[in-house]
Image (cartoon, rainbow, N blue to C red; front, side):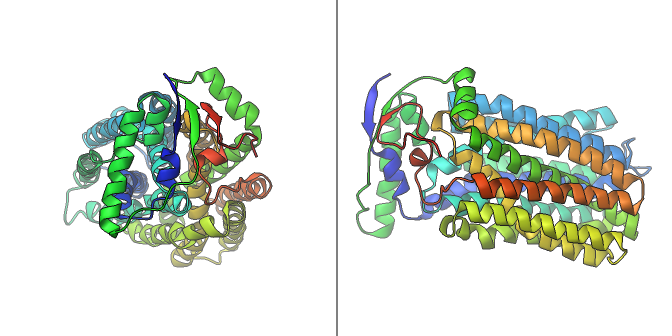
Length: 483
C-alpha cells in the first residue's frame, strides 16, 4: 500500500448529469422495487394465506406478525453480515451476491407447503435484502455527483413504493380465484419477484466498482481507468470538455478497517451523528413496518374490505409515498438537509396523530383512512428515505457500508421487528382503541426523531463526501473536525 495524491473524488463530484448516471440509477435503484413488492404482497395476501385451500396452514396474524418480523430480522442480520464484507471486498461484488441470495430465497418461498418453510425463506429473503441496503447505498453515494446526491438517493430509496404499487395490483390478480386457484396465485407473486431479480442482476453487471473504494484499497489504476472512461463518455455526449476538478486528496492506502476502529470512529469521534442515525431509523422503521404489514388486516377487520380488494387501497398510498421523495427530493439539496429532514419527520408525526384521533372517533371509512395515510406517508416517505441518505454520507468512506448496516440493523430491530409484532397484537384485538394506540406510538417516535434532526442533522447538501467526513486514510486536504 502507498501514499497517493488523487483528484478522483473531485472529478466524480464535478460531473454534469448524464446518461451514464441514469444507468447507475436503473442498475442499482431498481432493487427497492423488489423490496416494496415483497413487503406489500405479504401484507395484502395475509387474509388469503390463512384461508382453507391456500396450501399453507398459517394464520393471518402469523403472516403479518411472525413472518413480517422474521423478514425484518433477516434484513437486520443480513445488513450486518454483508455490510462488513462490502467495506472489505467492494461494493460491486456484494451487490451482485446479495441480489442472488434474494432471488433464490424468494423463489423458494413460492414453494412453501409448511409454515416453518415460509418463515425460514422469509428470513432468508430479508437476509439478502439487508445486504442490498449497505452495498447499494454506499455505491450510489460514491458514484453520484455531490450536487445531485440528496435527491437521487431519496428518489432511489423511495422507489420502494413503485414496487408497492406493483405488489398491490399484482395481489388483486393473484387473489382473484376466478383467474387463479387459491393455492397458486400467491405463489406466482413470489415467483415473479425472482424473475424480476434475475433481470436486475443482468442489468447490474454493467455498473462499475466504486472508484473511491478502489483508491483506498490500493487499486488506484483501476479507479483511474473507470473515471477516465466515464469522463470520455460524458464529453462525447456533451460535445465539449468537462470543467476542471477542484481539490485533491492525499490518502495512505490500506486493506481493511477493524471493528474496533469503526466503533471508535462512529461512537467516539462522531457520537452526535450516531444519535441522529439511531433516532431517524427507529422512528421510520416502526412507522413503516407496522403500517405496511398491517394495512390489509385493518381494512378487512374494521371496514369489511374483502382480502382481494385491499390492493386497490394500498396502491393509492403507495403512489403518495413515491411522490414524497420525487417532489421533495430537490429541496434536500437546495433548502438543506437539516430543515427538510426535521420538517418531514415532524409533519408526518403530527398528521398521524390527527389520523389516530379521527379513527378513534369513528370519523373515517376505508376511503378516508386511505386518504389520511396517503398524506401522512407523502412526508414520511421523504423523511424515511433521508435516514438512509444521512447515515450513508456522514461517516468516513472506510466505514460507510458498515455504518449503514449497523444503524439500519439496530434501528430496524427496535422499530421494524417490534413494530409488526406489537401492531399485529393491537389490531388483532379488533378494538379501535388498541389500533389508535399503535398509530400514536408511531407518530410519537416520528416526532421525536424530527426534534433530534432539528438539533443534530449535518449540513451535507452539495458537499463532497470527503468534506462531510474525513476519510480515515486521508493525510491532508479534507475537513478534520467532525460536525
